Image (tube, rainbow over the protein chains, first blue to last red):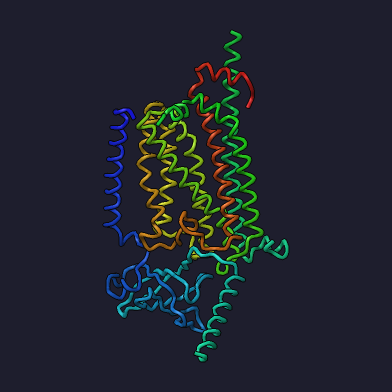
Length: 155
Length: 58
Length: 248
């Protein structure tokens, strides 16, 4: 390569690296603002502010969903598998809301450590599957569980 | 086919509005950018050809 | 290493002749592939166990998002090539591809919003992924606006190349946003190292429509570059011969 071009390439690379590090430093400093939601651990350890409009996210704990039979009020717990936070919500839940599903709720944390949500969004992962396959998988899991329980006594 | 009949296909289990509006929007966008690309390409060629023809006759 | 091919490719005349017979077949193949992939995806692929049929939006959303990023990568690299080697074809490429990339980014944003409503429960949320893709769209719009506002070609070439290169920083942010931060958006559907987390009858049509859209965009890009070459080189003799030879 021609020395002039080499120099130009070098200068551009240096500028890009510098710019890149400036941007990453800024993003590192703003990390908490870029994160869309606080995890249950962050809320339990007191990282999340009280009575401020924030978002909380996590997995809906199996068996924790309690619906009021007369109103739309619902309460449930979310977890990041280390800590749990209770969420109360009064409104229509998205279609994808179910136990074991990731959700993001917007609202305020009250002084009892309960998150009062004004909006609940469902999060999903990048795993897509036809319904028949999930059924087959569940069946397979059940049979394998049965099998192991059958095998155990013969040991 | 993943659907039993045409009605099911268009309704998409009450997601029809969402799915078809995405497909509609994308078709229109792609058609527009293709049309603008080809018409510009053609227009430039014709403009230049006319100009060269005129220059030749002078 | 010989650099002749590099310099050859950089010559507008050579590029015009080389690309002339390539644009239509690429575009045609792309259209057929895309149509095939989309019909397969929308009518024959199975629905998702959680999202039902709204999952079918993926067959537009993912190809458009991939193309929006690929176009920008190409834009940024040609900006670099122009700034270092002053290659004439690079700014032509940037000018030709920026509007196509903008359309792809817009398609990704709109399809994502429409998909978000029934699945997440909202059209839009300011999470890192959605915001960084919006920034990508705005970068495209900025490049287009800058290009159109500068009448001095030399200045426009340089200015546009500089923001294309600088905007490259946004690409890793888009890619890793779902890993670095908590986002509502899920992880990547396609990665180079792992098999997609869905059965073949779901990802094969997605791959086909992605390839189709790639070829379609490549065809469009070649046509747009040819237009731009004719405009910029209209004084040269070869353009005269070319134009008088045939129609389109």
